[in-house]
Structure formats: structure tokens, C-alpha cells
Amino acid sequence: MVNSEAKGAVPVIIERVKVQNPEEKQVIIGQGNFTIFACDDIFKSLLTATPGIKCAIAMNEAVPRLTRVTGNDERLKELASENCLRIGASHSFFIIMDNAFPINVLGVLKSHPAVVNIYVASANPLDVIVAETELGRAVIGAVDGTSATRIESKEEKQERRELCDTLGYSVE
Image (cartoon, rainbow, N blue to C red; front, side, top):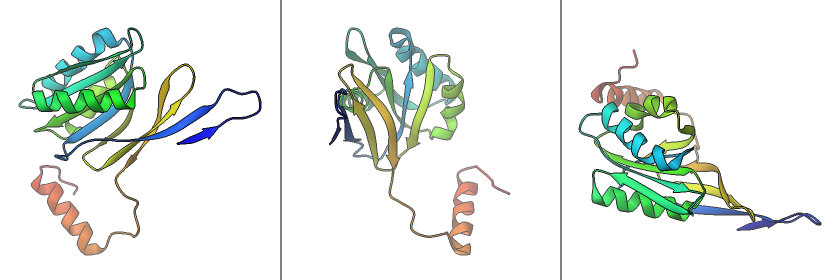
């Protein structure tokens, strides 16, 4: 944790929250509004976007200071709610899913009237960077996987494109 306090200023504490995703499921973390409605409505949007999806969404509400959760898989609901509560930022949401990739649902999420921002969409190991003040917590951003160390080779590019073709996403 970093505590940055200027003379006379209220401190801001920066914290790293490690996402618990033991089965490497697809995760989407974002921010929304109107939590009392959004949690269930975003869940319905996910179901409509991808038939056969297994998913859960948890969303933190500022008042009455709780985490709401809905989904169609008990294990995913448990993971979503535990991660969202640990992040603790009001109006943040945590989606975890099976039988779908973020590319299948991001368009629907981005156009949902209660979605303000998407921070990350990935099955990689994730850290969420959170700032805390006297008022509460806010997501600053996310660390998605490890850092790049080199540029892909021609062979790796070919492998990547073959995988995209296998998954039904042709590049050329």
C-alpha cells in the first residue's frame, strides 16, 4: 500500500487487489450506475448476447453498502461476489463467465445504459488497482497478465492466426 499525504490534505491509499480466479474463467470488471437495477439487467443482457453462457455478475452498491449478485451458476456467483466485495469500490461490477469470451458480450455491455466503463476483460491473472479516501474506494485500473518482453515472430503470428481461425475469428 502507498499512502500519499500532502500537508493538510486527506490521504489517498493505493491498494493492489489480486483477483481470485482459480479456474482461469473469463472476467470482465467495470463500473456502472443504478445498481439496484443494473445487476439483474446486465445479467439478462449477457444471457441474450450468448446462448449457453454460464455467468455471474456482482455489483457493489454505495447505499446500503452491499454487494449484489446474480447468475446462473453457484460457483461463478461465489467467485464474482467475493472478488467484487474485496475490490470494494462503489458501483464497480465483476462478471465471471464460462462458455463465452469477452468478445461475445463486450458490445452489449458497452451499449448498456447502466455501464459507465469497462476496465478489463480477460482470463489472465489480474490485479485491480484501487484508491481509497475517506469517502470510499475507486478502481483506478487493472493489470492484465504479465508484461510483454518481445515482438512476436512470424511463426508465432501464424500460430495466432490459426488459433483465431479455429475459434471462428478469421483475420484475413
